[in-house]
Image 1 (cartoon, helix red, strand yellow):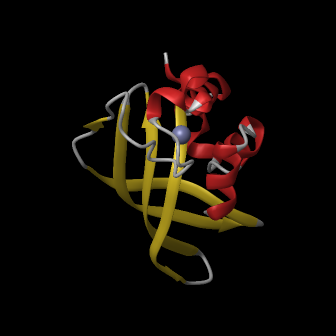
Image 2 (cartoon, helix red, strand yellow):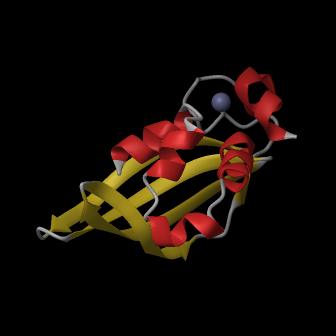
Length: 126
Ligand SMILES: [Zn+2]
C-alpha cells in the first residue's frame, strides 16, 4: 500500500495500474490514474491499521493532499488480494470536506513557505 502511495507521489502510473486487481483495471485506466496523479500533490500518509490472511489483506489509512487550492483528506479501508503479489481491489472511503488554502497561509506540504510562494503547487494547481 505504501508502495502505491509513493508511486502516486512519483507519478509511476504503470506501477499503480499494475497493482490494481485485473477485475478493476477497466475502470482505472492509465489515463484516469495519470490525470488524478497530475492534479494532486500528496502531503501526508498515516497508516492506521492493517490485517491480512494468506489470501486477502486490509489496510486502513488516512491521506492528505492538495488539489487546486484545496487541502483534501480522506480515510480509506483498502482491500488487497494476493495473486503472486498484493493487488488492490477496492476500498471504503470516508471523505472530509476539503479546506480552502489561503494564498497567505503556510503551505500544508510543510515546506515552510506560504502557499502562494510554494512553487510546486502552482505548477500542479491550476
Ligand atoms: Zn507546498
